[in-house]
Length: 214
Image 1 (tube, rainbow, N blue to C red):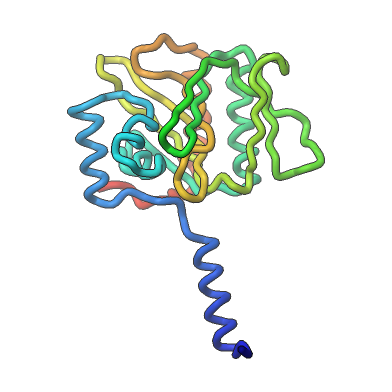
Image 2 (image 1 turned 60 degrees about the vertical axis):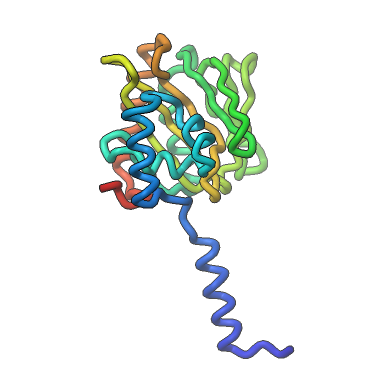
């Protein structure tokens, strides 16, 4: 079949729309569910927990939090590297918790020192970050696959406790990797809390990837 210019134009527009589709954002009903979960059910839980409970991509939970508790920006490879540089500044001896998920159902959270950006390798698409001078975790982030970065700061069950994270999301809204400065009920490293504030401020200076919840 011979493709006409009009058909090619339509095909190109469809491909462009698909390529530029944002990560999933919460609907009004999902926003209400997220608010109820964190207010009445399990305050302060890390985001993979409600994402698994609801069966949603985690970015939906992040975008459904109250506006003062969550801010997400659309990501580019350059922005991924820039934001991780601000995480480097938390300090290579600063304790954090790294969180990742497999298939949205199997979540892994483990203590780590801050993974620090390594000199760029031949593949500029990969961001290499190593903890503890290379003796700790080695993380290789495919920067082009990260489509949104969120800073979330939710209150915990008890006064003064919070859960604070910088989360990197794939196109489908699934979690690629999150760096938690603190988790409700656990004793945080003060340096991580201070570092989180600066990284969150950097993200908040960018346009939102989802309309703010109302």
